[in-house]
Each structure stands twice: as structure tokens, then as C-alpha cells.
Image (cartoon, rainbow, N blue to C red; front, side, top):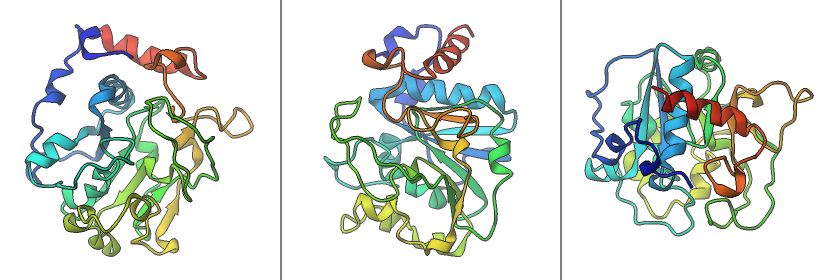
Length: 256
């Protein structure tokens, strides 16, 4: 796996420092994107962030860093052995982090965007509490690329790219206390169980293109490549499908 030590030209260290999450911290941008940050896959976060900034001029990317959220008292759940990522639960804090106002996007870090993310925000529809790609997807059982056991559940991968209508009345249920309540497991949140089905809007699958699952041209053209089965930052996936796209963003990032 790539590590911070292999990235001498790019500052990764700022993500390892406490990131202050306060509602008054951020400058106002048209588009706020929270990217899940996992200390084991720092390079994936960096390339995802770079792909967003490479295609968008009016966006702000925020690392959803569990350590910082704990220090700032947003997150206090005990570690969950079934949670495959450090941001398994913290992604559901986003409406609260945004003070239940406006729209904000969440995405996993194993994603690269190939076009201006404004195209995604332009699909925002105020009648929905969240919008996502509603995959009909069942992964193969076994061990995932990061050594974690693959879990299968309804609405798998729906929550890996979520456009939150933070000001929607129903998202007020998604309080900081609820996200931290151990009586509510991952299935409750990842299935959007605090919402009615009609409050979940649909995004086209180009915006959460599951690599290895969707195919060009019959399924369209990807705008957000999701290396959910494994990306080029893992040794065994160096030559995966669309690996050249991820490596292109890595190379341009490293050249700066």
C-alpha cells in the first residue's frame, strides 16, 4: 500500500493533526464536500480530494476525520469491530455539522471524480432529505481489499455517495446523540431508516460508478469512479479497471 512516506511532494501531515469542526469555521462555498478519511488509506483521500479540486473551482473539501470529531465532542461511539471504515458512522453527522442548513455531499475516499461536481449539486431537489444512487448490487462474500470481512445488506453502497439536504425537516432526527447511540447499528443508518422511502431521491449511477459492476457503454459513462472492490493503492489491485484514471490524478497531484 502507498503510505505518507511515499509522498514527499504532497502535504499529507495536515490530515493527521486535529481538524477543528465548528459550525463557524468554514468560509462560505457553493459546494461543501465531506470525504471520509481513514488513517489506513490516506493516499486514497488525497487523490479523491485532488480529483474534486481539479474539476471544480467553487468547492470545499473537508476530511471527515474521526480523531478530530472525537476531540471536538461530535463523536464518541465505541469502536465497532464490524465497521469497515473509520467513517462508517461519522458520515451521518453531516447535517448536524452543517447546522441543518443547505446542501452538502458525502463520498467515500475510494472515489475519484472525472467531471465538475457542480453537475451533481445541480440535481439537488428540495423535496428529498437525501439523494443517492440506488444500486441493485450484491457484492461477492469474502474478505475485502483492506482485510475486512465483506458484509451484505439491503441498500448496499447507497450511503457511499450521499447528497444531503441538511435543512430538510426529517434530517433533524439525525442528531449527534442519535448517531452516537449504540442502540442504533450501522444497518439503521446505511439504509436511511430515519427517512420514509419517498424522502430518498435518486441520482444517476454515473455518480457512484461501482468499478467492476457497471460497464461502458451500456451503463453510460462514469462521473465518479468508486473502487469499492479495491483500488490501485492496494498491491493486488494495481492494474484494476479504471486504475489508469486514479493513477493520472495521483501523478498530477505529485507533480505540484
